[in-house]
Image 1 (cartoon, rainbow, N blue to C red):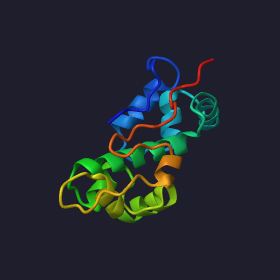
Image 2 (cartoon, rainbow, N blue to C red; image 1 turned 45 degrees about the vertical axis):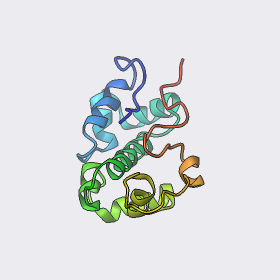
Image 3 (cartoon, rainbow, N blue to C red; image 1 turned 45 degrees about the horizontal axis):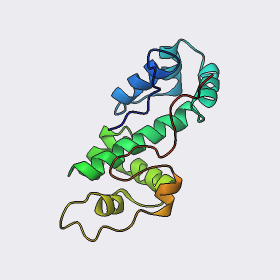
Length: 150
């Protein structure tokens, strides 16, 4: 999985982003991230907006969604286990985020992008997935998600 961490992970938000990626399956709040960064939640929000272009919670949800996509593409884990390992907690929460962000269900996503024989016809990448800046199979962002310079 391609981590969405700034190039110079020893500076700025890199360390807390790397920590969050290693702990996606655990409950993580913006307050947890702010505490680790030695910032107030408000300051953390401002730093994320300035350097990443999205708020901390939005970034965290995006990373969890990418982890779920990777698990759906590369494993045979059930939806409950995928939800747990990606930090969504429950299958219902995972389904809600998939519908909101990708316009599909986890099951449909798996059938479309797993690339395993017998999973049905692999359909073209949906426009909604493209609009979200995701590439199926690699779960890498299409755009630049690294910290903005200066």
